[in-house]
Every structure is written in structure tokens, then in C-alpha cells.
Length: 201
Image 1 (cartoon, one colour):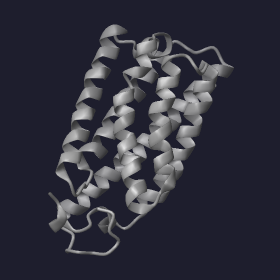
Image 2 (image 1 turned 90 degrees about the vertical axis):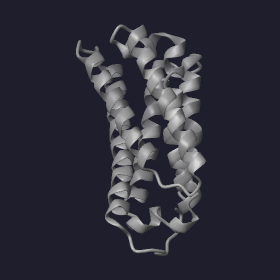
Image 3 (image 1 turned 180 degrees about the horizontal axis):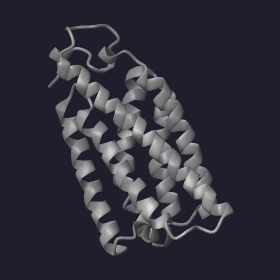
């Protein structure tokens, strides 16, 4: 992890897990970009009846994509990964609460209830950990920025310190930054993510 030299020959499992990890990052960036587009579009047009379904699909897809990265991330210290997985499990519980409270309509809870956005913070912390880890290992400074602004964005929206319009443009900023981060990350050689496996604990 975070090493640019090859310490051991890469196994098939090494290659597959790194690819899955990076696919999770790519999908997360694309999904958040689509969500930003959907929010901006709703500012210009009256939302159609299908927007709730679209939001639900994007939200579940985002949980899956972040989950791919969470479960296939390579970390030297195993307790970090275990704690990350615990936060992800908490995020799944939070997602269930969203759907139960909204009777299948998660958008109404996120948009109209203060606690709705708060329930998304555990997932944002998972993605924030991933971007911060990459920032630390490979000097991707935008990763630190994302790790800071994603949870803060949800917190500010939950207490209505930013309007829906502000939230739409805020998500657009996050999407652009995440796309830039993703572009810089996914083309790195696969062995960068593996590092020295003898150092794993």
C-alpha cells in the first residue's frame, strides 16, 4: 500500500482485488455525478414522478460501489479495515432506516427531514477514508479535500445551513473533485495498491 516498487510478484487475486477496488471508486464518482446532474436539473424543471425511483436506484448503487472499495481496499494495518467495515455496516443500517422511515421513499426523508442527510454521513465517511488513504499514500491532495467536505456537506445540509440550490451546486463541486481524483487514481499501476505484503498486520 502506497509503494511504487514491486516487492513480490502479483498474484491473480492481487490483480482482481485491486481492479474491483478501483471499479468501486469509478462507479462512486459516476453515481455522484449523476446525482448532481439530477439535482441541478430539478432546479430548472418540475421534478417528474420518476425522480424518487431514480434517487433510490442511485442511492442503492452508491452503497454497492462504495462497498466494493471498502471490502477490497488494501491496508497494511488490518484494524483500519475492520473499523472501516464497521462504519460501512452502520451505513447499511442507516440506509435501512431511511427506507423504512420514508416507506420506500428515501428522497423525501433526505430532502425534508433533518436527520435524513445525517443518515448518509456513515457512507460519506467510508468514501472519505478511501480518498484520504489515497491522498496519504500517493499525494492526491484532492483526496484530503473530499474527505473533509463530503461529511461536512451532509452535516450543513441536515441543519439547513445550505439551501437545496446550494446543496445542488455543492454536490456538483464534490462530483467534479471526485472525478478528478478518480482520473488520477485509476490509471496507476496495479502494484501501487499492493505494496509490501510482508508488512500487512
